[in-house]
Length: 370
Ligand code: UD1
Image 1: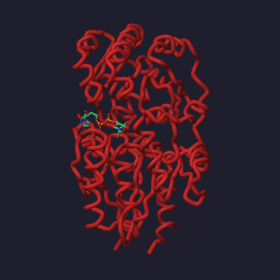
Image 2 (image 1 turned 180 degrees about the vertical axis):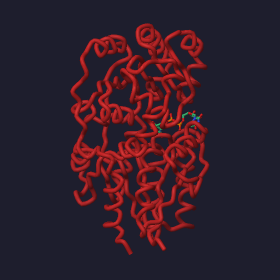
Image 3 (image 1 turned 60 degrees about the vertical axis):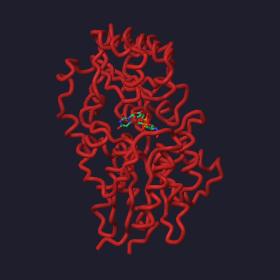
């Protein structure tokens, strides 16, 4: 009988590809009983269920059904619901990933447990954009300051934590777990034929994802962004799966029709992991404000323009293919990339598809295997 109960917290789209490899790695260890706790922060079929299927995850063992809301509502609801589950189930360890509201909420609930407190571990610790206007930065800082174990993806993560006074004993560099998902599903990703669905050619299109409030909530910014995308799409067809937050704002500001009428722009609903990664593998360049896509593009050597003034993943610029870009400079940046030879990108150390095994080893050491 596996003796160590480990809760893996999954909440929003970018979390699923971080818990999947760890779930599969722990299932193979006879001492570990991993259980998936889905907070329900993302709940649409194409924002959640599709990822569970692609990543071969079972139905969540526990579902908190939180849904959307303001930051305080969402964080508070997750804390209240997860505290109840903690009291009832008494896990030995809680693993939180990434930087979404549920990450900080479950961490807070778990570290304040009275008696039989579980160990709390943060996977993807230490990332900092140094921009406290980003809700994710607040989530990262709070989570890292109270979690017991901090698994970092790259040396900058360790340095940030040490500068914040975190004890070195808590920090373990394990690499980038998202790369494990990519490698786990590489054969299926390569077999997928997303290009014919969108009528685009290999290396003949750009891939767009946008959802950050700073880009999509403000009408003026969104208008400029749409104008730039329409302009780019005249020379380079763009595939753009639209996040629900972005869709709502495009509809509200009557911009969706403008995009729909641009012949080179292929809009879609958010798409599952395997299809999306097939589009990443084959595109000419990526335009995004996502965190994870900056890493996946670096790993694959695909040029990436990140529409943000900063990134918590500087290694994707220093060693990879990422470049920060403003909305105003977008068209010029695309032209630059189109005219350039392939970039000489390096794969950061420990981004090797073996992070989940290192994390499972770490858990075994920390919990003891009996
Ligand atoms: C959240 C994370 C962000 C992450 C992103 C990935 C926080 C603070 N933000 O932002 O870090 O990069 O997920 O997508 O945790 N909605 C749906 N269906 C869903 C989920 C959401 O329609 O399945 C709608 C909600 O009604 C809401 C909007 O999308 O209006 C935003 O959802 P929310 O979870 O608040 O934040 P995201 O922008 O997705």
